[in-house]
Length: 416
Image 1 (spheres, rainbow, N blue to C red):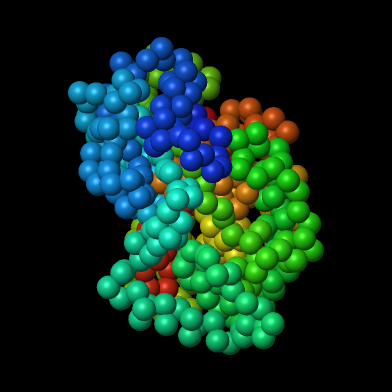
Image 2 (cartoon, helix red, strand yellow):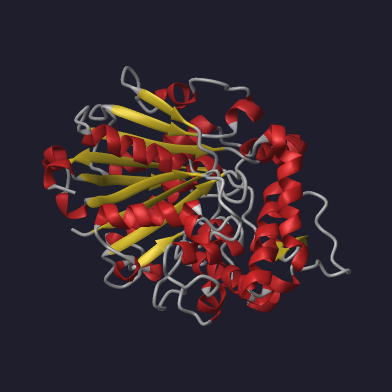
């Protein structure tokens, strides 16, 4: 990327993550925006020329069907400028980032704001909470697609004494089918999947904004309540409320900010599902997005200092580190079990605690992943800091369509 078109992240902020029934989407957004503006050294939002707002749940659970960003951001002083609302399932936040980067590179403005905010916890409407997940699939062909996915898993039977959780997201069944297919294809074990969860639970003890801040051993993960085999509760991301915000600028506007704290956006690549064969892993949309991002940035997997990946389940991390090229196909579980993806390992993955333990407020997740990368590249991650971090990558997937996620964004930061 030429210096003339280089885009920088100059401000970032997130809320603590967790079940926060007392806070609205508007309040969560305001907290994150205030933190991001302050981090950028801005007293208010007057410098922001355009904003992107990512959310997936408000229409169904709160009735805010349209103009969500215009409503949520108004109390933060965002008014009169272009506001774009983004919905791309769990990849909404990173899709907003991609669009803001494109807007700035096109010369439409010099300073932009990206916000992701989500309220998922509605204790008075638990049925609606879980029903909302189905909307990120093809609802007209849902039964047919689920039947196809479950057929993939038949080669790895469910133990007879395991009962699934009565209350669960349908995505846990979908991910479980993919996990069982991977187990049959490559020999991935339930213990290796549990090793991902144990690692990320440990990492989250070092993150003051994480939803869960307690250690779990592999044995404790395996002994937790079953959800959808091979997953136990500790292998599944929780219901989360939270928000994140990013301030971006062009090279021409960088003089207005502290350039020493600015983090370059080296690549941002979005892909969508394709009608591939289930065993054609090289055409998995996560792999295609990774290759596009590496090409944009002019770097490869061995250049990365750390990664944040979309571990909505512990198995998803195994699949995505293979897609990102950190492990050969089928070797992601072994790499994790050997400790290569822990802090202090060859390639730390999800030092934030990941979605599994840090939390997963769906529309905000992609923005919150980028917040962690920026924090690490600035050397400000405290006890979870990856030493000498120079390049960082995030993979953020959303929805399901066919044999893979419906959308995936891979973002690479660094290289200054």
